[in-house]
Length: 204
Picture: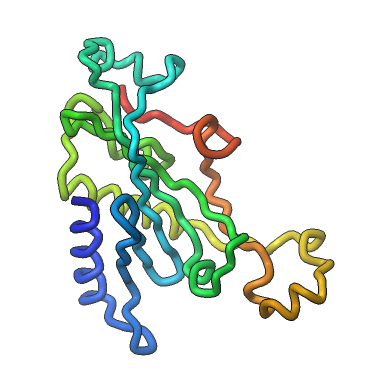
């Protein structure tokens, strides 16, 4: 379902935005059974689904909801992680560039879902026991992810981290492909992905 929504958005956006230098601004790529990418200009999103089903840690706020308290294994969920990278990181094979977790979608066996994230991602998707995942819901999540990411600019690499390079680096790659780059989105998950500020659960 997610891949179908991504394909539809590519067609819709390209019809509205046209092309740039004979290349479509928005592109979709199937990266295997459990992964897909969505490129929008200088941004690329990787949607990655885990093959396992997860239970929430007992400290998670989801256990405060009436839905979770009912039991019936309703909290066991699959996860789709949404990562953001710079398009040039893939174009120039800059394997050291940084990507950031924008949000993650939890879906249980009843197709009830919620989204863990910040700002637009965090406040649009509540009511785990009520919301049912469908194409419209996925579209809203994708567009909220895009809106969130476009608000952040590329940071200049710290001087001390790039002031010394080796001859091998120069010979192997050009200057653009050599420096680790990424955008600071101000969003990190505390336990499962990277260390940083705690993610916000958006349910009641």
